[in-house]
Image (cartoon, rainbow, N blue to C red; front, side, top):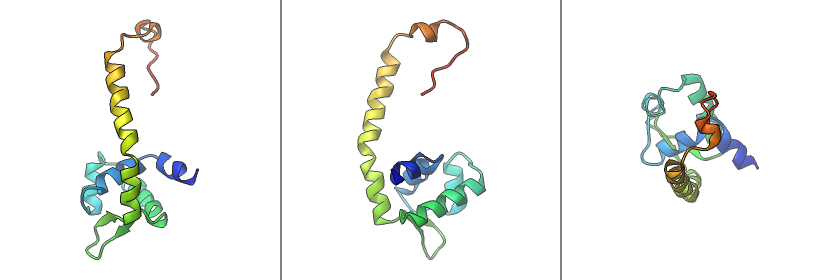
Length: 108
């Protein structure tokens, strides 16, 4: 449950995703995360460091630890499932609720 709590926090998975390819400095990571606020980014990076999923290198860049890379890799099946789900939703005809024009949106 602790892992689900950590991964469920806003921006956490995005940060893990972005750090999975290469170490990044704070500002570049912030830009790659669509300009999230610096306070939220700092908080999430601190949480990831406390969870031993990320660390700061000597040059000041952030990177995933081996445990962080394992976490990112373990999300692979979820990513594949989400691609199938998106394709399924794209191919599906609108439901009665979607076509009703009442202004309600799908809450996925």
